[in-house]
Length: 388
Ligand SMILES: NC(=O)c1ccc[n+]([C@@H]2O[C@H](COP(=O)([O-])OP(=O)(O)OC[C@H]3O[C@@H](n4cnc5c(N)ncnc54)[C@H](OP(=O)(O)O)[C@@H]3O)[C@@H](O)[C@H]2O)c1
Image 1 (cartoon, rainbow, N blue to C red):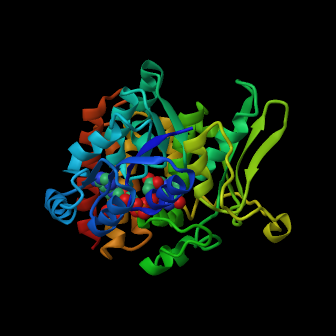
Image 2: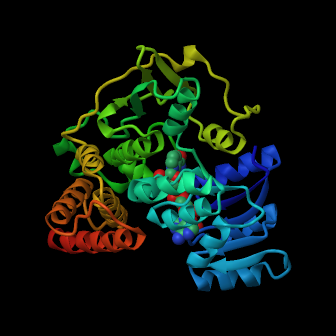
Image 3: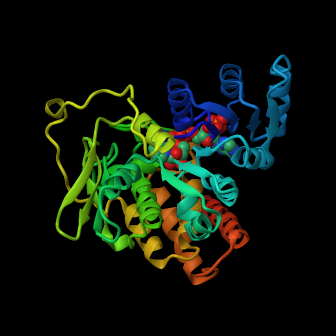
């Protein structure tokens, strides 16, 4: 059970829910970091009294220092320095990685090198840098506990199975707001339509990833690293009700599932209390209200990004990092209203093809990966110019 946490990305959907869980369970909050939402971070600092807070930009940090002048116990930092300080804050035994994007990778690696427990919501970390993070865990005696509801479900199911008994993972997906539509019908969808998720309330980037199903592709790669399972033994199963959070099939044919009404506070709590099971404040499960439960295969022709994620997972090396960076850039362009919805997959696919022709590396370090990440973002911006 965690006594004290640092939360990276405390102003976002997962960050705010983590703070609610901490308040309810009496877990101390030592450090909080955020991007640009300085008002919300200021309010969190006043309520939770961490020892340190940090914002992405120095100008926002300067504003926060003035706002918190009457609370001298709170130190205010900025940017990379703030995220690294939070990730290694000496009084925090668990680091909650709840920031969005590959920006989470470096602080997670720093926390792992300090032998901390990382509660990982940020899926981009393992997608881009699984090959860098996983070998460090054993070397530094650190632990990585999943927060993503699907990975938490798989983790809980595998805790009840002997090592080596996993046959395959059945990773469930809601299917997003455009389930059942054809590729042609997706060309005109608006930002507002894409941001309307049927079962989960989440940050903007992950909501768009859910609409394109890239989110499920990122989760396939994340699951492959977390559970040492080859991508071809991870079957995505569309389950629109989001009640079964994922399943594992064991060698003897048993299938174990973890279920419940959609509520991220449960996997967050479990990552902070593992292996303890404390009471939660979620809605009690009602099988009659949850019925019927349906399952269908994903449409890989319409949701091409899921197929591309499998391709990246099979190829390994720098391809998943490039795919991830290309997707982050393309989603940002879509949310800025500069490209259409289906252009996200076109741009990611074209960028991956270019990377395979030149620049692809099977073995890489952190700096190589970040260089390819920057290249991919530039590549997508250049390609987008030609279609705008
Ligand atoms: N939401 C979910 O239900 C859910 C479920 C599973 C996994 N995840 C994963 O969890 C991560 C967060 O998702 P979310 O839905 O919570 O996203 P979100 O609501 O968009 O929040 C993102 C957080 O990251 C912060 N951030 C951005 N850049 C930062 C930087 N440079 N340094 C520090 N913090 C920074 C944001 O700060 P500002 O807002 O202040 O700019 C915000 O606090 C994503 O990787 C997502 O895939 C989310």
